[in-house]
Amino acid sequence: MNISVVAEQSNVPAKTIRYYESIGLISAPPRSEGGYRVYSGRDVETLRFIQRARSLGFSVKDVGDLLALWHDRSRASAEVKAVAERHVEEIERKIADLEGMRATLMDLVTRCHGDDRPDCPILDGLAGADGCCA
Image 1 (tube, rainbow, N blue to C red):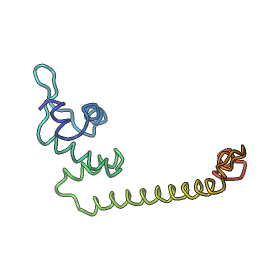
Image 2 (cartoon, one colour; image 1 turned 180 degrees about the vertical axis):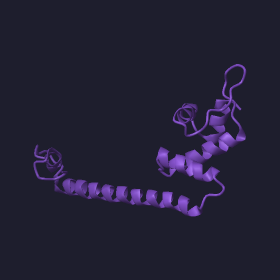
Image 3 (cartoon, helix red, strand yellow; image 1 turned 30 degrees about the horizontal axis):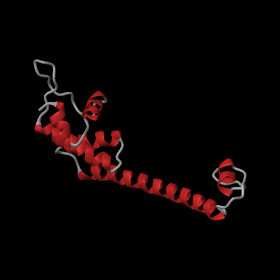
Image 4 (cartoon, one colour; image 1 turned 135 degrees about the vertical axis):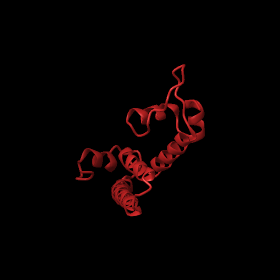
């Protein structure tokens, strides 16, 4: 299969596939006599795996770790679970940060009259005039 077929079957753009090859996330496939990449069904499976992991927010490094574990049939599932648990903790930290941002912004929006007056608590808050947003 050429890269455009693999891109279509895996739902990973060709440019991204070449990037994954350049960083070593996937092995560069053999080339045809004409110099074109020749992919296999296993490459499609690997790219789908990567795409699913990335869609869950795993970092490229974590995806590499998960790929190594996926290929290692003697691995312990505890290793896989540990990677996933670390990722869940990171997601929870991000959620807490987002909730804090939302609360701050909602406070500023609530304090703003939204009328024709030029004074604006939102802009004052962003400028640090009220101690917000540090």
